[in-house]
Image 1 (cartoon, rainbow, N blue to C red):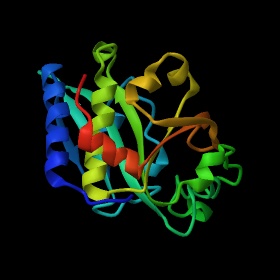
Image 2: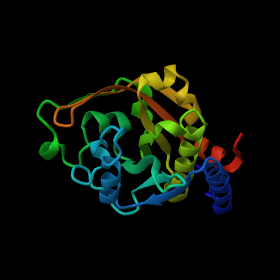
Image 3: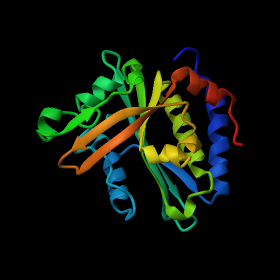
Length: 230
């Protein structure tokens, strides 16, 4: 990413979306202990299991290289969760990181099943290098859907990632139905391509064929410097 991070712009950006969350009846907070995060997400009956790239038993995250966000309603019950981590891909790229399974396991030779596989055919994934902020594990409680909250969730994560890391890219993997139903547009991803991750993790019971979604560091900076809630 080119340019200098302006702390005041980040503060103003985050304040706008934090206020928007409060108006929707949600109090946001962030955490850094992923053991705690997993314990929270396991207690959510309608949420899919957290993927191994956010689980310390499979992919430990060093302090300062990951965080999670939680939103509580007026009864202090969990209304939303999401998580982010930093991948240092200065000597690699996101496609290779996925195919090697290192995006999911710190030590694939130890934790991966012999039949685990990941294929990435999205052409742009090979160009995603350097400091890469990966955003994932999005969950929003059913009674809060249809109210524009995904935009708030994505914006806050982007603002925090920009403040902490000033990444070269922000990336994610999204199910195709999110594009078809217009949900992906609510998250405000600048780009998307099919073939991001054709994934099969045997012991995790995961079989996905996800889109690659991403934003460049310069696009992220422009967003934080100039965007307002609409």
